[in-house]
Length: 443
Image 1 (cartoon, rainbow, N blue to C red):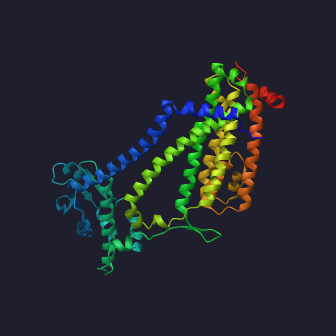
Image 2: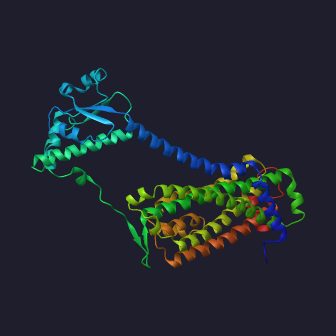
Image 3: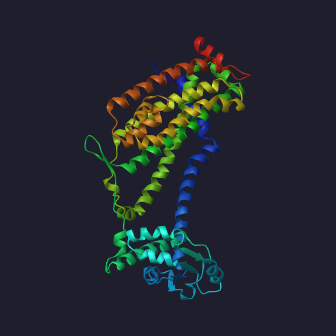
């Protein structure tokens, strides 16, 4: 039997057109992605502008090094165009409180105070420094005094220069003069690559982000459009239009039409969002291709897991049908907006729990508890896609998960249909649990 009869198609068309024509749909569909892209562009512009302002504003930083061990080296390390480094010989014997009271009347913008013990430790090798650490603990904190706010970029430059100067001082203490401290402190390029049974290589960090992104998207879709189904049913019950509709079509046809119609609205909205975000990503990645290449990321060589993507689509569709049926059944048991939140709360918790678990699943995709959660129908629409992106899931596991999810969808549709058949015409108080059980048994 074909469930999509002309009557069901008419309900689908009505639900779709009614919502697509609303101002809120147009605003959220076009305005939200443009707002997100605009905020991202604004944040990038502000970050670039802040970095430019830091570079254009010249500051004088004075170095007070009473031990005289790293002060000159530190001044040599300040090579940025926005910083003029000088030696603060007149403040080297001051305490922090004295220097703070004198800074405003000096010609310095910043004052880097290196305690005598810190300068001595900086020139010692690690083993020697460890011995003196116990004698001078708490007395060797380097302090940066500033007359104005210190931008994070400038603070990072000062920290890096101090670290390089300390390394040079330690090398000098053992007779090494010509070693570049930047080369010694540079990070080693490191990437974790997962290798599948077929030999395919996957960047672990990239696919973890992809798995979490898919889970977050579906979590968002279920919450928004599930509640939309409940409110669509509630609106018709309150307007008495449902009695007219039930006289010309069966309750299950009305329920199926609403589920598919609202789902089509969500699909159209996500298609527009995906198009806008894809354009933004293409232009953003194209503009930042050189920076990504320097970080070792070659966009052209990234493999696309088409098999996992196709499987994920099946899980998303079945997951939506499962929860949509549950939301439809819940909507049929209520008669006012106040009861709606209480009715959908248990279903909402079933969506929140697997989303919380996804973060742990991404870290340990093949753990026993992760495998079990990915087989449970109420959790698998979010958990299994995350596993498919970050690990090689055995065929029997995702196949069993799909079968169990499909069976649960049929069971939920049967239960929701029996609740909907009676509850759609019930008005007044919210149905209690014994009444709902009776509807399922005798519906």
